[in-house]
Amino acid sequence: MTTSTAPWTNWTGNVIAHPTSRVAPTTVAEVTDTVIAAAESGTRVKCVGAGHSFTPAAATDGVLMTLDDLTGIESIVPTRGADGRVDGADVTVWAGTRLHRLGHLLWDLGLAQPNLGDFAEQSLAGAVSTGTHGTGLGHPGIPATVVGLQLVTADGSVLSCSRDANPEVFEAARLGIGALGIITKMTIRCVPAFALRADERPWTLSAVMTDMEGFARSADHAEFYWFPHTDSINVKRNTRLPGDTELEPVGRLQTAISDEFLSNEGFDAICRMAARRPSLAPRLNRFTSRALSARTFTDRSYAVFASPRRVRFREMEYAVPLAAAGAVLGDIRDMIDRSGVLTPFPMEVRFAAADDVWLSTAHGREVCYIAVHQYHRMDHTELFRQAEEIFLAAGGRPHWGKMHTRTAEDLSAMVGRFDDFVAVRDRLDPDRVFGNVYTERVLP
Ligand SMILES: Cc1cc2nc3c(=O)[nH]c(=O)nc-3n(C[C@H](O)[C@H](O)[C@H](O)COP(=O)(O)OP(=O)(O)OC[C@H]3O[C@@H](n4cnc5c(N)ncnc54)[C@H](O)[C@@H]3O)c2cc1C
Image (tube, rainbow, N blue to C red; front, side, top):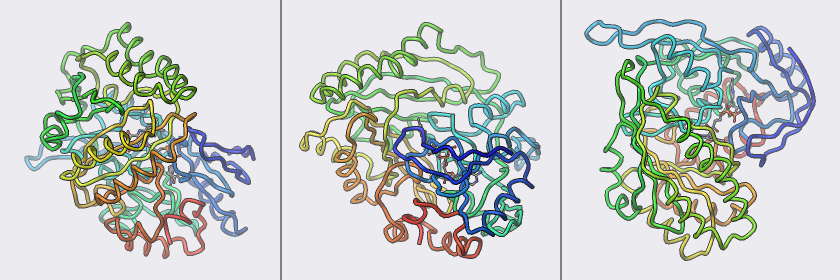
C-alpha cells in the first residue's frame, strides 16, 4: 500500500482536492484497516475510480483511496434461462477494474456487459456509483446489471450484499455515489459476447425531434449528436449481432480520420479557435457536422460502444421523461438561438429503459438523456444554467457524475427512492466517514 499527499484533480480539471494522504490497498484487509484507522482518527475517506466525474463526487480532504491494485475477474458463475440453457454468467470483478480492460477480459471468456457508455476509461465501481449508462430503450444503465457486491462499511465490516443478503444495503449501494462505504468487488450479470453493426450518418434535428420515441426504437442502441447553431445531427445506430459474426472493423485510415482527427486532435484545434473567437462557433459547427460522413462497420460490442475522448470538456446531463424529449430539445434549441450562448461542442442524446435502482435517473420510467457540453477553455455557466432550467421544468433528473446545481432538498422530491437511500446511509455511516463536499450538498 503506497501513500502520498499530492493534490488530486479530476479528468476535466474543474475539481481540485487536497487529500491528507493517498492509499492504494492491495487486499480487502488493507481497505478495512484504512477505513478503521481513518474513522478512529476522525478523518474522512473517499475512494476514487478514474476521476472522470465532472462533479466533486470523488474529491476528499481526508484519505483518498484508489483500487487500481484491486482489479481483474475473481469468479464466473453461469446463469440459465427459463429453458434451463446457459444464457450468460454472473461475473465477480474487483472494483478498480477499468471498463475497457473488462471488455477484453470478458470477450476472451465469450461474455460481454449488456450495454456500455460511449467511453470506457472509468473503473467499474466508479461507473456504477454514479449511474453510468449507455443508450437503448431495451437496456437500463450499468447499475441495473449489478447482482451482488462486497462493501467495507464505516465500522470496518465487510458486507456481502445482494437481493438475498443485506438486501437494503444492496439496493442502495448499486448506485451509492461513494457515500455508503468502499465497494471492493461487484458481481455483474453478463450476456454472451456479441458484435455490433454500427451505422452512422448525418441527419437533421428537425426530422428526429417530431418522433423521438420512434427514433429511439429504430435500433437496439440509437443516439445522436446535435451540433448547436445548426440543424445537423450525426445519428449512431448500433444493431446487436451474434458474437461469431464476421467482424468488419473501421479501417486504420478511417479511424485516423474520423476517430482520431475529427473527434480528437482536429476537433481540439476547432475548439481552440472557438475559444479564441466564440462567434465562429456556428460556422465551425457547420464545418464539423459536414466533415462527418456516413459509415458502417461491425466490431466487438465494447469496441463499438466506446471511443477515446481526448478533448477536455465540461458536461451537464439530465434524464428527462421520454415523452418530453422532443419538446425539451426544441426548447434548448430556441434558448441557444435566443440567448446568444455559443458552443463548438455537440450535444448528445441517448435513451434508457426504466429500472428499479433507488437513486437511478431512470428509476421507474423510460428516459431520454440530453447532455450539454462546453469546451473546457470556454465558459459553460450561462449555457448550463439555462439548459438546467429547461430540464427541470420537464421533470428531469441530473446524472450524479455530471455538473448540476441540485441540493438534497431538491433531489429528495425528484429521485425515486431517495429517502430510503438516506435511511440506509444514516444507519451505515452516522459519522459521515465517507462524506465529502459533494455528499454535503446532495445528501442531508
Ligand atoms: C469523457 C467522459 C465520458 C463519459 N461518458 C459517459 C457515458 O457514456 N455515460 C455516462 O453515464 N457517464 C459518462 N461519463 C461520466 C462517468 O461515467 C461517471 O462520472 C463515472 O462515475 C466515472 O467513473 P470513475 O471511475 O472515473 O469514477 P470517479 O469519478 O473516480 O468516482 C465517481 C464516484 O464513485 C465513487 N467510487 C469510485 N470507486 C468506488 C469504490 N470502489 N467504492 C465506493 N465508491 C466508489 C467515488 O467515490 C465517487 O463518488 C463520462 C465522463 C467522461 C469524463
